[in-house]
Image (cartoon, one colour):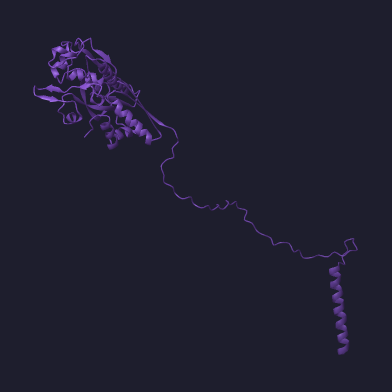
Length: 330
């Protein structure tokens, strides 16, 4: 019995195996003698991607170091124009030259013409700074209320004659009478004499635009008009040159222009004081013909104009004032 049962089980297992083989080989024919074999795919695993749009992650960069420095020069010059008094001119021109030597972007253009020209130009705003060797008048202040006037130096007006003149000093009254045409010969003045001439006085003065002329007429001539025979010159240098070349002449210049080519006369005033036109006497205010020198701006000076005026008032600028023969501002 056991043997028969074992045989039956073997037959049964064989039938099951054949049936399964038929399923695998494909008893269901698809018209082809070649069996269809289905293999499990070994494709890459499916990756699920989030379909929501996302921004790309930022690229990390090294932070640049913070730099604090002055703006890089563009190479473009800042330009200011200055005009006016030929007395103030040497100070401002020398200061401009030195300032521009250390400020490559600055272009400072300086010209003369006289105080009147400088005041008119700054009033018309055709220049950035005006120069004047006289005070601004009340009428000018009314016309140009925005004027800001800055003193940059002190000066004296020296009365000069040709070196051949034997005169030792002159009084304020004698100066006045000469320039008003009342005294016409050097022999009318005690101690004065011009050898080998007729001793005729040749009167030299400044033109109407001059601040020095305005001050001279106001202080020494009591605001009277000088003689029509006065030869008018447009600068201190022109007066100096004419007097140096004309034996019988008399003129007046800023003490900053006095040279060995002329004789600067001491002035006798108050019937007791004879004072020479020197820097020390101007500074001590003992010389009777002295005044301040000015620069003028429309409103408070700013920008290059303001910085340049500060330079003139600085120790470096005031050294220029002294070197040019003027008195520094205390």
